[in-house]
Length: 113
Length: 116
Image 1 (cartoon, each protein chain N blue to C red):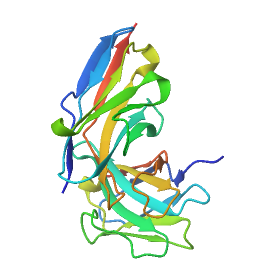
Image 2 (image 1 turned 60 degrees about the vertical axis):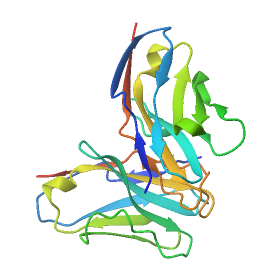
Image 3 (image 1 turned 30 degrees about the horizontal axis):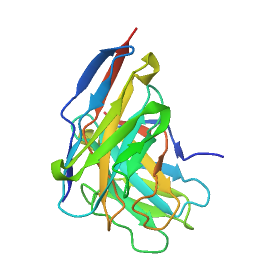
């Protein structure tokens, strides 16, 4: 079975700082990768996803993620965070044959003014 | 258009009672998922419905948990004889295509279940 690791549990950044959140998965076959975000008081929404093609994917609100197959990683990045990016970020994976998602434990991002 | 809706938003129950949680997927979405978000376990898959196929129940934690989907739309998750460890936020998601592994899953606001 696949699993997802997010090593950063709580990240605190100042506005305009650069962000990189780690995500590693374990599964030897074809995977599809997702980053979801949960803003305070709101429900989970998709930031971006990768399933084929260019391993650098761009999502909403200036976020991007890079799929590195050799490292089993799909790290999320943003060059300059804003206070409004304060949220919990979840990395998720499914396989080429089953659409149910396996989530990491999430990273709580706090952006200070 | 309308997103995934869930009811109730909050449910407090006593240990041993049965509860029913409801999910209304986005109109036209044929795939429906239930997940659970709890402090100790993070976000876990529970069950998946895809059209008229038999559901994937591989994530249900015990036989006290069951779910059905009527008419290919509304789904109900039932927990019998609730235990304190069932306390969690129960999330429903839907996606457009049947079994589309690359499809975006759209999540509802969740039902927060508290078992006293």
